Image (cartoon, rainbow, N blue to C red; front, side, top):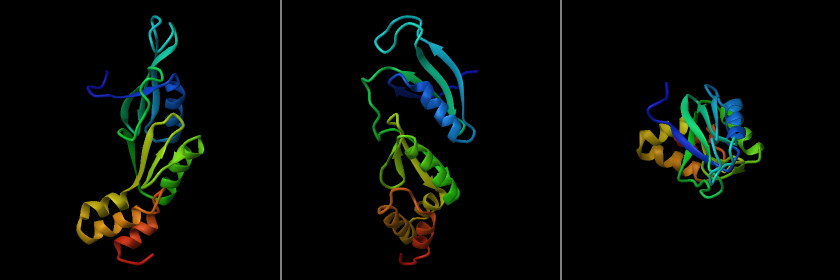
Length: 161
């Protein structure tokens, strides 16, 4: 059964490669059906892979090979919650180490230009607490690329770096 709401991510001919990578990195992720173009169109030739159904951490997605006309921006990102530094490191290093790029405050970009937020729960919980705890955690985060769990926990506790 097709999900009522599915995230559609636009690719420039490499949706299947991206979906396979995501399925290899993230839990509860897999590649489903692959649909080929029934005829030539602006983004594909007949029989090219046009749509790839995939799931990332339980979220249904499709990759649409639509061509180069719409590049990715930070206006869309996958946000992955992590529980440990090891988990944060694993996802971050997989994305960045596979031709991606680091950004700021827990954001990185994969080799296909899709943006990811690798976000430790220690950070989101501190921000949800509000007040001084949120200010300290947010202030610490602003100086990071990949989030450092211990540094966020120290900031939450009011400890100086």
